[in-house]
Image (cartoon, rainbow, N blue to C red; front, side):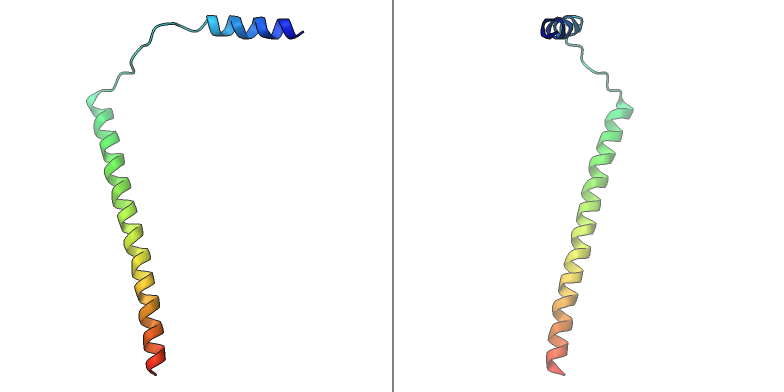
Amino acid sequence: MKNETINALLAGVLALPLTAEQPYLDPGSGSFILQIIIASLAAVSYAFRQQLGRLVKFFRRSKDDKEQ
């Protein structure tokens, strides 16, 4: 049983192609990847700005409450 499993795995590995083919990226793929990167940076900066605004608002509210 153990030998059969090893033989099956070995046959599966040997059946894989040995050539290292490079994936094809056309200009549309490159611009799509660039768009994903730019959108991710914009989303992260927007989320950071929102959280920073909430933090500033929290501390301003606390300061105003103490004065009253």
